[in-house]
Image 1 (tube, helix red, strand yellow):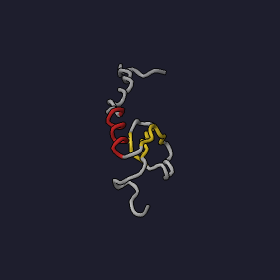
Image 2 (cartoon, one colour):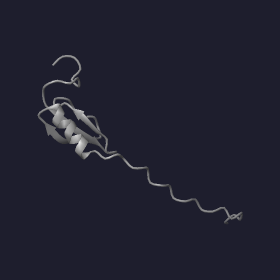
Image 3 (tube, helix red, strand yellow):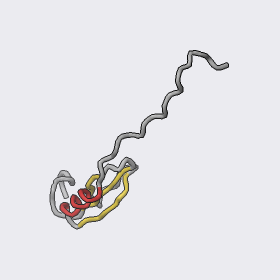
Image 4 (cartoon, one colour):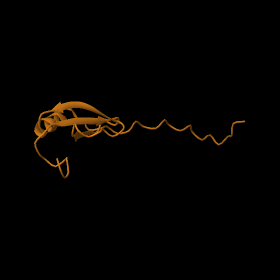
Length: 77
């Protein structure tokens, strides 16, 4: 294969996910970047996209920070 391997075309595709739950399409003959893992192997691009559509969930908001201790105006010693 010459050129960009991610341009639509024939061949197998993988669906990969990172620790944040982000999904991406990937080619099986390429090394995965650190932090990504394969969750599906598909015979074609459309099947891989279908998998993403069925399984990807919009990440929710970050967990709220712990409330700060109230300032009482007195210093602890």
